[in-house]
Length: 419
Image 1 (cartoon, helix red, strand yellow):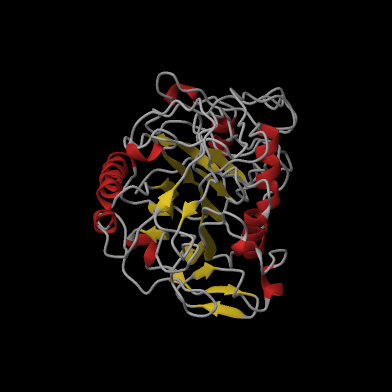
Image 2 (image 1 turned 90 degrees about the vertical axis):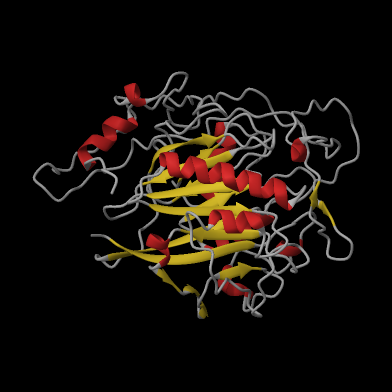
C-alpha cells in the first residue's frame, strides 16, 4: 500500500516545499487564477487542417489548409474508425494547479479555525508549466489554487461514492468544447472524476481552462497535458496530489495523461486518460502494451487504478483490451444507455469508450443512480434516448447528436471505504 501524506504536510506540498522530489526539468505549478498564464501558442482552428501523421506515429508539420471536419468518417453510422484530427499547433497550458485555499481539518486541537492559503504570495495568479510530454510521472501539481470551495463529497462517513466518467465529448470542427454540448452532458451527470480527451476550450489559456472546469464542478482540480494538439486530461472533485504524462510512442499529438488523486480513505486513486489510435488494432495494442509498462513501473499495487477514455476499439475482443487485462478488470457486464444498448461511437455500434478499473476498485462498483433512474452496470450517456431528459439537466436531447460528436460518455460508480 502506498504511503499517504499526513494532512498537515499537503499544504507544504501545494506551496512547492517538496519541489526537490521533482525530476530534472520539472517544475511545480502555481495556480491558474485569473492572472497570467503560460501559453506557448494558441490553437488556430478553422477546421481546415489535416493531421497527416498523428495516427501513424509520425511527427507532422501541418503547413497546409486541407479540408478537415475534425470528425470520424463513417459509412452509414457516421464513424468508420478513421478519425481526422486537426493539427492546428500546440498549446502549452499549465492546466494544473495546487489548491492552496482549502482548510485542513483533522479534528485535532491543531484545527483552531486557521486556513492554509489564501491570497498569499504563493497565489499570484500566474501559472507554471506542469511538465513536458516526456514527463515520466513526477509532477507535484494538479489542482486549482484558490479556486473556491470544492464540491461536497458524497460520503456516509464509512464509505465514499465516486462517479468516474470517460468523456471524448468535443463537438464542432475544432475538436474542442467551445460549442458547449459536451460541457452540458458532463454537467448533467455530475461526475466526480473525468478522464477527458480533446481537452481544448477557447484560447486554451489558464483562465479559459479554469472557466471550463468550473462549469463541470466549481473549484474542481484538473490536469491537462502540455504541448499537445488534442490533449488528454483529468478533472477531479478530490485533490490531485501528483500528475503528469507518459509518452505515447505511436502518436505525436497527445500522450497518456495521469493523475494521482487523494480520495477519502487510505488508498489513492490513479486515473489515466487515454486516446488510442484509429489506424489499426495492432497499433492500439502497441499503445496498450506501452501503457501497461508505465503502470507497472509507477503505480503502487495497493492504490486504486482507473483507465478511461477513447480506445477506438471495434469490439470487446480486441487485443488491446486483452493487454489491459494484465492490470485492470475488463469483464462485463458493461454500461448501457437508457434502452439497454452498449455501443459508444456516434452510430452506437462499437465499444469505442471505456472506464476500466483494477480488481481492488472493481469490487466496490455499485449501480449508477441518476434521479429516479438506476443503471446497474453503469451508463452510456446518449441524450437522444435519455428519458426523462430533466434528470440530466442542463443537457439537451440533441447534445449527443451534435455536429462532430463522435462518442458517448461512459459512467461507472464506486463506493470505496474510508478506512
